[in-house]
Length: 163
Image 1 (spheres, rainbow, N blue to C red):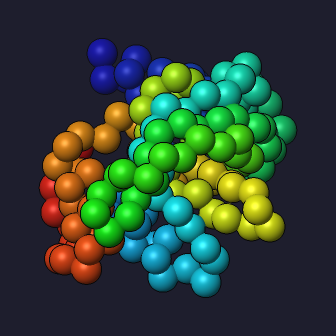
Image 2: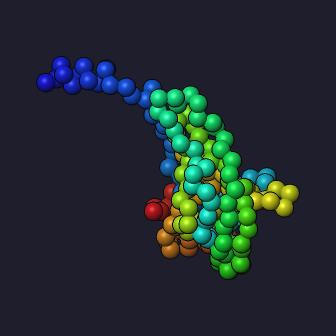
Image 3: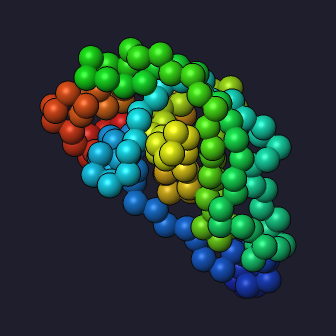
């Protein structure tokens, strides 16, 4: 039996290496956006886009996966101020779903997301990748409270447990 398992291990096609990412959550995203020289806005809202334009990986042709995959979308919800998610926000946005080899960032159409949008020349850009990026789908109340606390200058510890 061991010989059969060992042979299967060497015969079956497998990915050459696995993606290894450090744990990343919305508080870490907030801190990264805050320390960036770029201008960011945090928004909690419903994200819509054409899901057919998300990158699809052909595992037989992994080398053909593009690192940057640009699409457009829209987010409607509330942006973060010092008092919380209370400023109306509805904008068309640019989206870059990045891939690291065959691993790509993910987004869900029609789902509430907490996003950190880079503001450039009157436009907004959402970047996501397989190790996190700036999109967090269906954030729970505790996560939103922690991010609000970060905005208010309270303890902002990305190592606190989050969903």
